[in-house]
Image 1 (cartoon, rainbow, N blue to C red):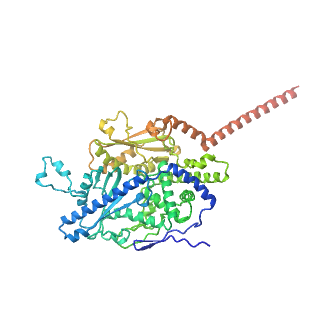
Image 2 (cartoon, one colour; image 1 turned 45 degrees about the vertical axis):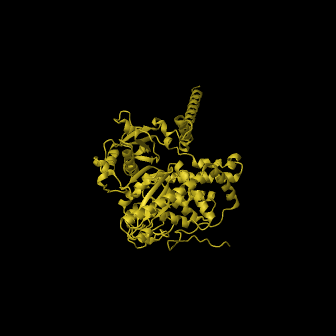
Image 3 (cartoon, rainbow, N blue to C red; image 1 turned 45 degrees about the horizontal axis):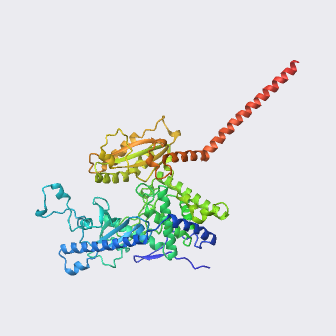
Length: 601
């Protein structure tokens, strides 16, 4: 009898156990391992990892950033007039979270970082805001003076670095952030200010007491690495198990991006949601190989009974006064598909998921399971699949086929977001995009007679507004567009046309009007399309042959639709019955005529 599997982990001085028991702890049998070999062949050709040189570049950049952050903390301590010993011990540490911290190593992926500093450093020191320059530096232009930042701030030190480009500070967000490219690598840097005089090198970020006395922004910033570290601890135990976790995370991310499901902001799943979901399935099947775990992933979430929460470990309260997710609170009762973060304070990471996006997610989980399960059964039969495709792993491509979103609906709504300048358009678009899910779920989805509605989470850097729209050249150049597909429920329709004007007005009035400052030239221009009227840009990166090939595939899918085939068969059968009845009636009439002739004779 194999020894029991212990999935508990000790992290931050606390022992953490899985919320659910193991379903099957046995190792994958030989036939599943052979099936997994086909997946490995597919991965080697289609799921590339960051090359060694790229990994070294990232490590080098993080070392430079860490040194820069510590130098900045020392400069702030010295400016506060602290002793030389206090300056030397002030510390400051740089942490990573998300896919980089886990070791997913996707090429070109960004790095989420958090600088943790002592209480002598403030947000103003971080951004350099509120800086009053010496009289000798003051220019005649008051606006330039107002925009100046402290040259000793971390933001300015990073901005001035020769390897840094595309530097954007976002000070007014709920979680203040610096985003920039360092040696071509996109970095998101958050700020966390502890309620402590120093941050030593052996600082334990996973200990719950680090949250004592911190503000809301710091709590949210620290949540990233704390959640990531706990996920890593709960799926560890053996190197093989952790590598299985990483492999399936990479595959699910690739699948979600291809199928239009990768965006937490727009109501689907983001990186942390995929990490938690795969970790949960690994807890249920801890010794499964990647191919088996991927099949179980789709089975588990195809069958999941929402709104039962997905959680890796039961929430605990460290009694620091922070709100902890609780299934019995009134607010949580309205959550559609909760997925709870494992670190204190536990919170729902899928608040943005609506009933409309959950419908899309469930359909895709069911499709994914059907594809993988059929692949496994056909592979077992031995003579069904093409031998060359099996050996190369090409048989797995069906799972990762791009979504047919742009040929799946009869009607589409585009939302073209424009701004007068690139920087204004960027901030305005970020705000509008964060509200688009509310347009879909709260305005259109709830109040209109629709069978289905779907927001495509990928933007197009193009303006598809009407030619008659009074837009400047700059507005058309600084624009992005999102598309929403929908299908009308004819049985609930009143009248012959669907009017969405009121919903769009409400969206503008109650959501978009909250943006400040709203500068002239910032606008959102909606436009409706039939499927055949969609612009060519919607099809260029999906279908080889562009729009023409897409329309051919649409016709093929319509012809292959089981409901359509059934309707056509019923129509043929009804026509045949009608013809048979006519023939029978004609035969009876002919017989009656013959009998009448015989009687007359």
